[in-house]
Length: 230
Ligand code: PGA
Picture (cartoon, rainbow, N blue to C red):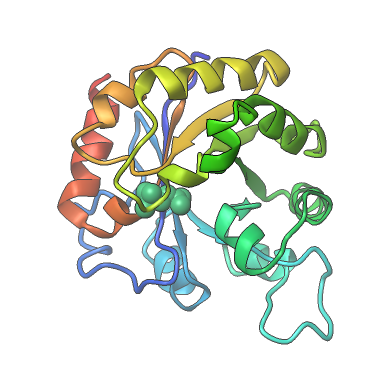
């Protein structure tokens, strides 16, 4: 892929880091790299107001209705979001979101002009039993063809400090690329300032989805600058 790298911050259930809106903030748009921030619903407005490219961490496909505690894709869109995460493993685990539901979310997002970033990835058990590609293939099968950003996030690497090695990540990204040729494929799972260069320089890694390290302004800046320098 010849596109710019995409660096996405996933703040999860954390407040926007102090200084996220500073004039030199690494979360702000840059000319030579795409930066997107997935904020909590509470912080979406603050991010949009200061010009950050902002996404929701999830939403239901219906436009409105009796879904206590949820928001809709159309609400994200009308509040200025351009992106939405779908199928993050934490949503699959804690909210029992299925492949079918993730597909509905992605379709609803696409219909509204939101860019869905759909997450896939295997658990540690699935990898140790050699099923990681089967699992990822199955997750990919239900994702609408029009989705053009996929995040490969091995579940065992998320929030653990144990990232996939560049070779492991590259191998899976190449596999995903073989199934979805025109897709941006970003890596997530303990991506940090320390491993950003090695991961982001892999030929089939088109960017990163960053959780913990995206809450530390200086570390996130280093990751963004590492990506810009590649
Ligand atoms: P992590 O999270 O960088 O803290 O591992 C990544 C993610 O869950 O998107």
